[in-house]
Length: 422
Ligand code: FAD
Image (cartoon, rainbow, N blue to C red; front, side):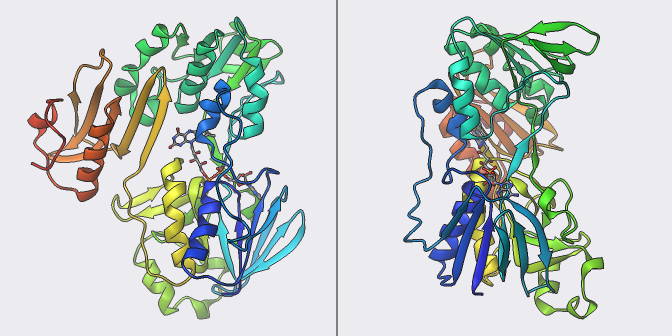
C-alpha cells in the first residue's frame, strides 16, 4: 500500500492517521477535511466551550512527525472504486485524489427541523462559538430535544442565567437512548436547575421568533437550539457501490461492504474476502482496501450479533486502531462494549453496554438522591449499566460486561457492594 487517504478530520480520522503510522505504514498519507480547523475534540463544545471556560479543543497531533498532508476546507464529493483491493479515486473540491487505501471517517451531521425561522445546531466549534455569546442573562433559549446534547446545552444555558425551555417529543428525556422509565429519572434535574421541560410535545416548525408546535401553539424564543439527533455524512458515497444503510455497512474489522452487483465475479471467491465474510451474514462483500470508522460506520458487532452505529467519542478514539490494522492486512476485530458519558445538571452520567432486549432493571441506590446507578440484566448476565456520579460502578461494571461473567442480582442491588462477578 503506497497511498492512503483519510476522509474526515474528526477524532476518528486523526486516530486513523496515528494508528497507520504507529503500525509502520510508510507510504503517502493525506487527511481531507471539510472543516477549515485542524482536527479538534467535540465533547467540550457543549460543556467547557459553551460555558466560556475553553476556546480551543484542537487534538494534540504532530502532523509533521506523522508525515500527513492536511487538506483542510476540502470536501469529498464522490468516490469511484476500482476492483476490490485495487483502490480508486476520491473526487473532491480540490480535484481527484487517487488512493490504494481509504479510510472513511466523515462522521455525522445534525438533523434540523422544518420551518424558515433561525435555528442553531451544535456540532462544530464554529457552532459553539456562535451560540456562546447568545447565552446571556434572561435570554429565552428554547432547546428542542432532551437527548444528550440538548440536556448539556440546557445545563450550560441555565447556569448562565438564561430562561431555558426544553421541548421533547418523547415522554421523557433520553428516552431514545435509555428508554422512558430510565430517562424519566432525570426529569427532576430540569426543575432543580430552573429549566422548563415539556415532554410529549411535537414541533411543527421553527418560525421567526420561536417555535410553532403541532396543534398551533407558539413558544417564543430569542434562540432555538435543535438537538434532535444526527445523520451519518454519506451523501458523497452515493453511487460508489458501497453498501449504505444508516451508516457505511462494514464487517467487524471495519471493511466497507461493496454491493455484489458492482463487483467483478472473479473477485467473489478471493480467499481474503471469504474470510472476512464469516464475520457477517449481510449481503455484499467486504473490501480489503476501504474501511469506515467512527460516527459514519455501521459495523458488525460479533459480541452482539448485530450491526451497531455508535455515535460516541470512545468508539471514535479506539476503533481506528483496528480499522488501520485492517487496511494494513492485520486480522483484527473490534469487539468493545459501547461506552459514553455526559455531563448534565452538575452530574457525571455514564453508560456502558447495550440494554435492548434485557429482561429487567436493578436499581443501585435511590434515583431521587445524588448518586445512583441502574443495571440491566438478562438472567444473571449484566447487559448494561447507567451510573450517576458513581464512576467506580461504571469501571467495575464495564469490566464485568466485557467479560460476560455472571453477577449476583441481589448483590448488584446493594450500592455498598462492588459490581463484580458472582
Ligand atoms: P466527526 O467528529 O463528526 O468528524 C467528521 C469530520 O468529517 C468533520 O470534521 C466533518 O466536517 C468532516 N466531513 C464530513 N463530510 C465530509 C466530506 N464529504 N469531505 C471531507 N470531510 C468531511 N460523545 C461522548 O461519548 N460523550 C460526550 O460527552 C460527547 N459530547 C459531545 C458533544 C457535542 C457537542 C458533539 C457534537 C458530540 C459529542 N459526542 C460525545 C460525540 C463525539 O464527539 C462523536 O462521537 C465523535 O466526534 C465522532 O467522531 P468522528 O471522527 O467519527 O466524526
